[in-house]
Length: 282
Image (cartoon, rainbow, N blue to C red; front, side):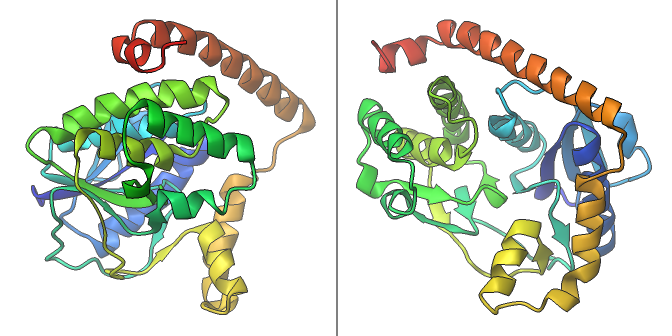
């Protein structure tokens, strides 16, 4: 097994575990010898994959998006670098043996935060991001934003620890304002706040498939849908399993209850975070 880096993901719930199993097969095939760290609610589900290091995890953020930081923390406790990919990503070609990255964050897709904000139609969300940048005293013109489906983090002399703490605090504020996803905002702002390196590397090291991104590439004429038909079908089968109406109704009610429980828990988390109180004084 490589001890320099690992792949890693978050996989909580049947749907994401099924996606992650497909990804585990891909890594086993195209990156033999590279470990795959997974935070999941059922580690035993991955016992058939020798490269998988599965650890039990219960979601801590309201909708789970900010739990990526726990995946990164665990991965960097074991490896020098970690390559995060969403659980529903597929790897379609061999992964090179000589991958190496600079310390800090390396994004595969993204841009300057101010450029990204120009594409956001919800003015309230834009103003919230600008407020956070002002409150944490960073120059928003210097902040980067990344697409969170795939990126790399390498240890940077302890800066990554400060980064995780800052990300946690910022996530509490964004979630308190109803922005449960878009963790790329928190990551870019946290990196800027603590001085974590943030760079882009758009090298196509190997071919991947991500459902929504592939649809956009096809729309732009950069990909052929017939080449990816099987991956679209497999993705759809996992995303929309056959369930009766009663099970769907029960699942919907349960998800709502969990959502409100996490909102209540957020208040407690926020109250216990001294940095949150120092930064976001009312």
